[in-house]
Length: 155
Image (cartoon, rainbow, N blue to C red; front, side, top):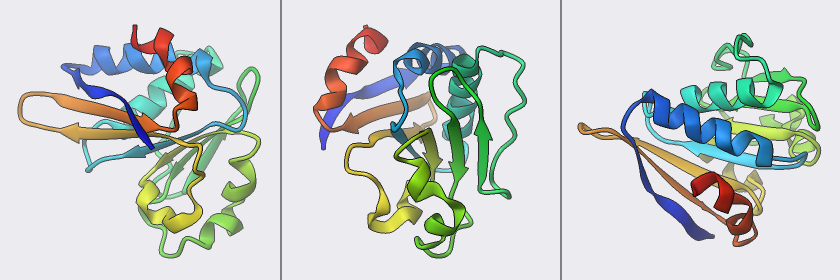
């Protein structure tokens, strides 16, 4: 896994919103984004913005999947799965949720990916959010194959 970008300062919500909107059209079926970071670091905000951008509906209701574990959305080109694994007690519950299958056919946004154990796909893009006193920060890492796809997003 390579460092692809960062740390990127997300000085306010508008910067995170812009980045999510820029990334959304570059995702395709089978892509998995692993969103990690402490509570309040911006994972859910980023996922919500990306889902709204990808569905083309800025008013799309995007509830937190903290209690349901998974919310899915229809979007052009691929279904989107937004997962919050915070309450997951065993990585094998991913199979029961259907997430293992979804990672091969949908765009999957997974919060708290550390709960996946070794079930995270090796080709996933990792977005690590950090809340510091001065601002929120984002570090992006993943396989080299992502570098070219991210160039227009990070330009």
